[in-house]
Each structure stands twice: as C-alpha cells, then as structure tokens.
Image 1 (cartoon, each protein chain N blue to C red):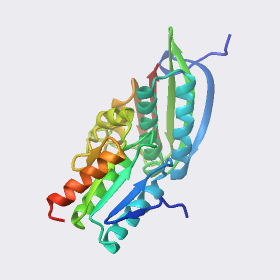
Image 2 (image 1 turned 90 degrees about the horizontal axis):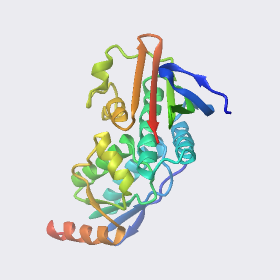
Image 3 (image 1 turned 180 degrees about the vertical axis):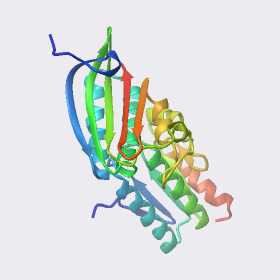
Length: 145
Length: 122
C-alpha cells in the first residue's frame, strides 16, 4: 500500500509529492509541462488536463508577479474512490488585503486582465486561499479525475 | 534571445506559434509583429496556434493586443487552429477573445483575411 499522509481538508496524499520553484516566467512553462504530465498520469481527459494546466499557469504567474516568487507543491490525492491532482502555490509576498475583492473578475493590481484568481477558481473543483498581509499567500487547488 | 519567426507572404504576415511560450517571448512577439506590420505595410496578420495546448489569460491578452494594435495600424488579424479544449478553457476562464477574428485552420484563415482586407477596400 502506498504511503498516505492526510493533509488539510481530509485529502489523502497518495503519491508523487514534488515541489517546483516559481521564480521566473520560464518556470511557469516548466510547471505547465510538469502539471500536464501529472494529469496524463492520472488519466485526466483532454479538457480536464487543459483546465488544470491553465489554472496552474494563472496561479503560478500570480505567485511570481504579485508574490515575488515562490513554489508549487504537486501531489496526487484521493478522497474515497476519487483521485485527483492537488497543487499548492506558496509565496512570501505582500499578501492580499481583500481576498473577496481580489477574486472578482477584472480586479488587477498590475498589468493583467484580472482574471487570474477568479478564472482559476472556475477551472478547478476545489479552491482554497489563505493570505496574511505582509507574510504571503497560499492557494490550494484540486481537480478530480 | 529566442524569437518566434514572422514570415511575409505578399501583403500578409504569418506566424505559427510552435513552442510553449514564456511571458517574455509572448511580449517580444507582440512587439516584433507590430513593428513588422508598420515596416512591411502589411494588410493582414495570420497567427496559427494549432500547436498550443494551453492558452492562459496572458497569451490570450497578447492575441487580443496584437489584433487591436494591428487594427490601429490598418491591418486585420485572424487567429487560426485553436484546439477545442483550449477554446472551452478560455471561455470558462472568462476570456472570450472578443474582437479577435478566428478560423478553424490556416486555409480558412487566409480566405477570411482576404475577405476582410477586400471589404476594407484594400
């Protein structure tokens, strides 16, 4: 039996926990490719793969542009018979003062379209954000197979 | 530095994006294309994205920007070959690419570009 660690939300981490750096925009490309490979390994259909990779791209860019860089933790998770992919984006940037406002489409502090957070949430099944002003932001997403 | 090649064919500029672009590469393409539209007096731009398996808001915005800048420079833009999974994801993301002309493949894209340019009396 695979080693299981129960994390936040009662999800069992089943395998392949890994970590990727998010420092430069090239890291986003590398992360997209890694996330794509994991969704394929989990047997995601093409549309589900594309949604998860796109959500990862949005959140990875947020961590770099707004969080001053960080990392993403990648893990296969299970809940009952469901299997899925979990990504946790962590940065030590300035944090987000008003999360509900930051989740709205059109909200932007910089050069983007402001679709990052709200858009990413629509592309995944589970979305959790925690942020402490001055300390950083942690965004967890899961997409089930 | 990496660059996406821009090909000139008559009065049109052709770009096929065949690599997973990082953000600087996308910005560079935007700059290069607008410079070339002006320098070559191009009437139209065709961008084929059939190799792209992901278009996120950044790349989507780049495509919309290119179309808008081309319009100001008196040129039409057609984006071709978007994969169905990419289209579904883009719309769900909230990016409908309004103002960007699209066609299923390069052949139809060229036909559309001819029509657009002819309709403007070009």
